[in-house]
Length: 133
Image 1 (tube, one colour):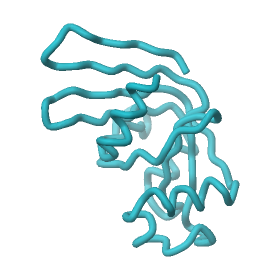
Image 2 (cartoon, one colour; image 1 turned 30 degrees about the vertical axis):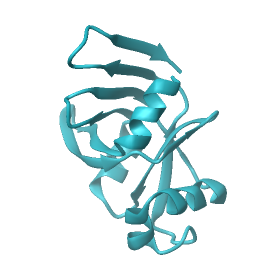
Image 3 (cartoon, one colour; image 1 turned 120 degrees about the vertical axis):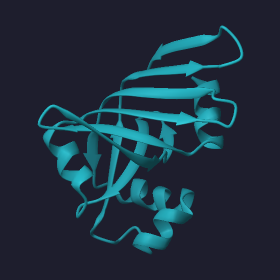
């Protein structure tokens, strides 16, 4: 899992897939960080993705580097109101800091994947790693 997290730390932007009425929805998204609790992300409660996540917590996040190597995470998410997690999102993401200004912003919603499946695929090699976390 260490190699997967290193990849995500160096390739923070990817795409998040959700669904609406069993139809896939994909949009650019930013990886937040990883702890022993899971993999963390953030959104705003005034975006469609928030209501999609509340309705169906099953997601897929995929980040790709310039060489077409990628990490894919799949699993169910949970929301947290823990202020430490909100502060860490603001600390780790200049984008989140610009939008929300502080962890106290009521629109900042943090969600995480406590368990799931992670895949690392290296395009130029035959190495693919499937891990449950």
